[in-house]
Each structure stands twice: as structure tokens, then as C-alpha cells.
Length: 296
Image (cartoon, rainbow, N blue to C red):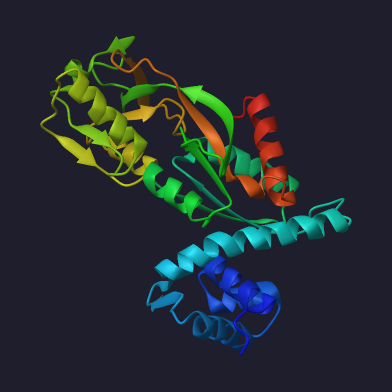
């Protein structure tokens, strides 16, 4: 009895895990969905365990599936690198990048410029909090993350794009908006607007409050940075955000916070073995050019 999986089974599983869909994996590989389903079923039978949980919202990797994907995705990446070294790839004509970020900036200007240069490359872009972003990177569910202060480690390549400080964002006509700096104590009578649990911003803000013995009676937690901006624009409170994490508005002012003078790195983070992939390398090159041109 053959106890070794075939390359086709591994490839089918890896692409289903990447795409979270049997049909999309079949389309990517140019085969029928039934072929993909059979390869995965045979692999599950060979391993004696389920690799996917079928939910209404889509496919979810089981624990065994996550462990296998962490290895098989590396094999697929190596195969891509070999193919690219052998083939002539003088121009990018297609491809697919899975990109996540903590905030709209600096991701959006980079995506815009990349789209102009490589219009046929598909980019899937989603905002996630810091904790989820690190998890997705560790599980190899994404190709690139643009995030603040990613954790260092041998499995992750990082490239710093810029540094910025936290500021108190408020409506431009707020009484504190004309000041050059405010203290957290100046904001205690306000509703403080923060991103959701798991965000680096909320973690840092709560640490600062604890260090300086400051409590806020009213804290409004939202989901993503754009939601924080909308809450401020609708006069729901004052937000603590990195100064360049959202796009400027004439209706908003950003004021330095005395207790938060530190600079934080915004970086591109990539699974280390994916760094030399043609698509990833081209995106990193564009990001460096946009930064050099002060596009964000």
C-alpha cells in the first residue's frame, strides 16, 4: 500500500487552503473541481484525518490542515521560485497577491501605484487588527502585510517604510485642536475612540493609561481605522491614531500627545521564503519607490 501522497494531492490541497475554495483552486490550476476534490479526499484518507471543515461561510483548515499547509505552502513557494528562475519573465502579465494591512495608509498609495504598473495582477486587500495580521502571516494565509511593528523572527522578512507617532485626532473646531500638544489627562472628559481588541493601538493606549494612572470613563471601541475616523467625523469622540494611518481631512486635526512621544515603524512583512518571488519582489520595489517619492 502506498503511504506517500502524490505531488498532485499536495498541490491540490495547498491551493484549496490558499483559496479557501475547491472551485477557485480548480480555476487556478486549470483542472476540474471534481479532480481537486478527489485529490484532497485521497490525501485525507491517507492521513486518516480531516483537513477542512466545510462551513456556510467557506472552508476552514483543521489543526492538521494548518500544520500540513505550513509545510506544503513552502514547497509550492519553492516550486514557483524554480519555475521563475528557469522561465523568461521579462514582464509581469498576471498573478495574485494576498495583501493585508492594519490601516489604509500607507497601503493604499502603494496599491494604487502598483496597479498602474501591473494592471493584470490581482490584489486581494483586507484590513485586520495587529494580532490577527501576525496570526495570518504565521499561518501563511497572506503574502504581504503592511503593518506597524511586526514581530521579528527568522520566518519573517520585514522592510521599514516609515515611522510615525500617535496623535489625538479630533474635529478641527474642537477646543483642544488649536493646541500644539495635549496630555491624556486633558482628554479624560472626552469619549476616547480606539480600534478593536487585538489592535496594537489599543494595547499601547491602555499601557500608557496604566503607566500614568489615567482612566477613561468612556471608551468607544470600533473595528478598523476607517471606522475610528468615521466616529471622529461624526463627533463621537477623540481618537488615538498614528498620525499618518488615515487620509487627512479638513474637518479633522491631529495633536501631539505628551505621554506618547515614541516613534513606531510601519513595515512591509513577508514570509521570508516568499521574498524572492517575482510578484512579491515587484511589490516591494514599488513600495520603496512610493516611499522615496513621499507618496505617503
